Length: 65
Image (cartoon, rainbow, N blue to C red; front, side, top):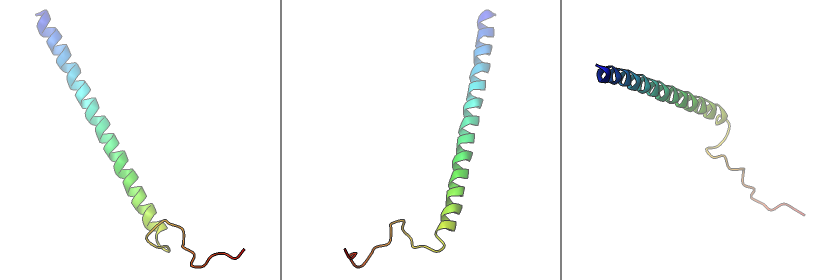
């Protein structure tokens, strides 16, 4: 009987750990998705008046000394 009770306790503990692990993964996934959505919204807002790259504008002529 003692073995059976130990098995039941261990089984319940493993089930709790698995559920906790699933909750953590779900929270991370939601956080990543929110971050991606915010980055897309920010990028769309930032790119309204600019070109398609973040490089500084190229000067065609050398500066006079």
